[in-house]
Image (cartoon, rainbow, N blue to C red; front, side, top):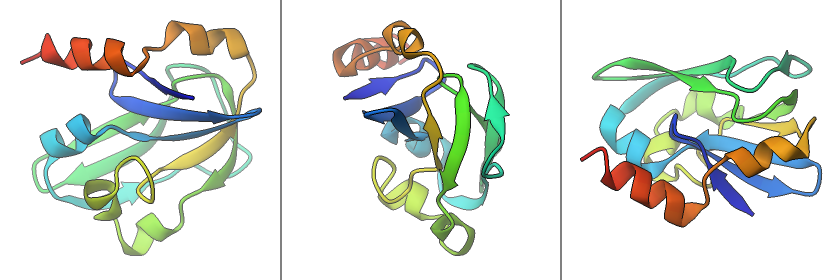
Length: 123
């Protein structure tokens, strides 16, 4: 199940684990990504906390936790290849995986149709 935040993160839910990255819309708005700072494995975050940083030729932007949970894995490939965020934002360009501490928070996120309507309203 894929969900989206209004901060332009996507979250792929698989059992009790969530994979998180930024949307295609967000990576296009940023432009060429040149650096990504991922969180520490084991760190705990509440929904809305700043978890990671993505820097592009245009700007630096924060990546927020779309849900509450603990970081269980980070995408180490981004250190040497931050452009994966541009070329594969919803697959190989993910930022981290985290536990799902409160599944009810998932209900507050947008589905794909809701997210597409949300970004259409931004343009």
